[in-house]
Length: 271
Image (cartoon, rainbow, N blue to C red):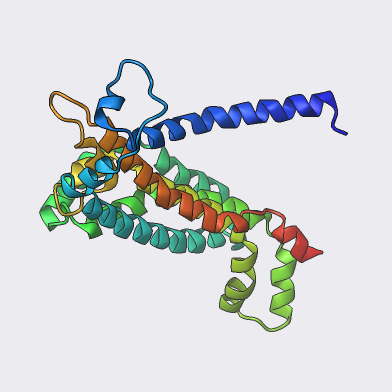
């Protein structure tokens, strides 16, 4: 039988979760409300759902094109970032480098720089080489801006992995590439999953660089959603429908990677 304190804690947790989910519920509700119900002075809880806002997002605002652009840019940038971050983090965590801690802190400090400081330099450089409003240009920016944070997180996970397993593998005759592929990668699954989720979410919701560096061909979802604010009115239904569709890929990515987010894998391997 649960104690009164445990029951109170359960109620408190449910209350906190409800606070976090309330905005998502309200946006989802607004996305299927008729426009006259959205603009009503009092909240309307019972209405006949409509899909007109979703249709308007695709037909009038080309949401499908923006979704494709975001998918190409963000998935490509996340994969490249994870590959480079894993290589750099392994070197900093395992190889005997002088000043590895200082170097790691320096790499992380690059992420402290506000995006608005480097947005204009990126724009001027890309303008000279013809990468404005291109997928390649946006991928380069997202990889460059997200790599320091990814290296820092991955290094922390790799340091926690015991070296005894790798040393035993070396005694068994495995080379460094085989050790990384067959031992390091499986055991660092939680770290890779967490880093990939952070990198993906940051890039998926990024607004500033996309505002500076895209015009029409490589416009991402945050920029396209911002265009749904007219001069004299805000299309709340269309914006809500777009936000709901923007949330779906993030939920799918987190759902697919959640089984890897268990820090006890390395401890279990040692045992």
